[in-house]
Length: 188
Image 1 (cartoon, rainbow, N blue to C red):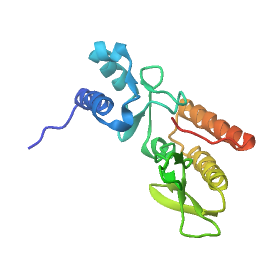
Image 2: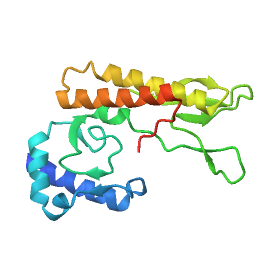
Image 3: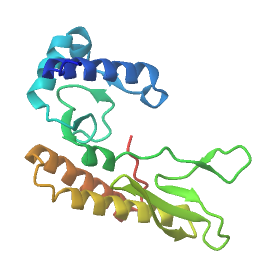
């Protein structure tokens, strides 16, 4: 019979997973771990145990947008559905022979000659089609508006802490500002 994991066991597993992800996952090559956590695993474990909630994820870039650092100042625990909202599939290359032009987040090519770009995003874990568009910029704007809707919907979760609510509102403001300026939203 397996023994039940203690909170400390879960913290150690999460620590080891974070370190491995930053060392071995090509999508995390630009992510660092605070030297205080690297040099003192017990400090990480104490931080983990202080903020841990079952089935919540450690997030490094909701609290501090565009953060590339796992640290006590940048990380917080969030529900899985919140952690997944701002995940973006890396953009696809488009069009030219050397594939040097990259599509914005939430945009891919479609088979339609009239509207060759489609917008999509994950909503509640399911890929959702947001429409077909004549330009990648129009498709990306649809993605931005979809993300704003998702973030606003997430604010209705009654389990959220004031810190998570503040972070979600900050991201809503960032994306609204991007839409108003006609700017592409980037998540990293």
